[in-house]
Figure 1 (cartoon, helix red, strand yellow):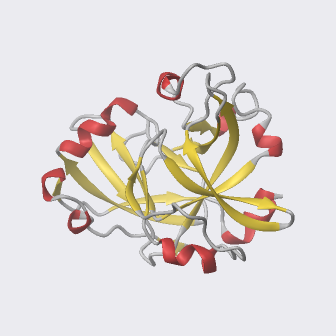
Figure 2: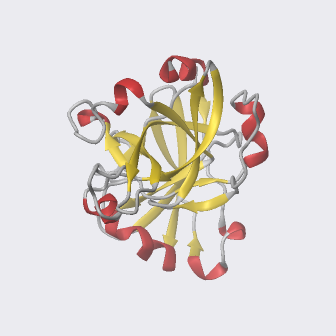
Length: 232
């Protein structure tokens, strides 16, 4: 009835100065999914994400070799798709869309940019790298995209920061090491020089009562059997 998700230490995948690792044993129930979170008391990395408050502002995608089989990508991967343990807003990351009836991977920048904007600073000002599920149909940046431009965002896991009491960063990912598919929307933005940039945003939902901080947000995770309907 559910898949158990567990957290492994990522201290060996990051520079030692970033993390001081300790385990807590916190279970985070999500519809149809169980996430097992571990407490990461961060040093440098915590400072990088503390400004985001309740937003999802970092995630990891490092099993690039598994993308083709997991998401049935008949055209393979485009050049430039690289593994990353720290994908951040305004950087390029792979997303999955449908084109002529087939799933294809495209590299896009994380964070929607309003038309007419002079630069990408609005991504951080309005936190458009995340789109709350509660307002996805009313936000100007996503109201059209949610109807016509939905995408899957492959990931191995995501980071979240607790703001209550001691600041703690959490990283959650499947114990089976399978890839996740976050729900997302995508759009495009033309900069003042006339260059068109493709952009995307992760749809997030409220944390439940078992999260360590009630103000936390979590990505909307699409089940494999629902991915085709989401992309249609």
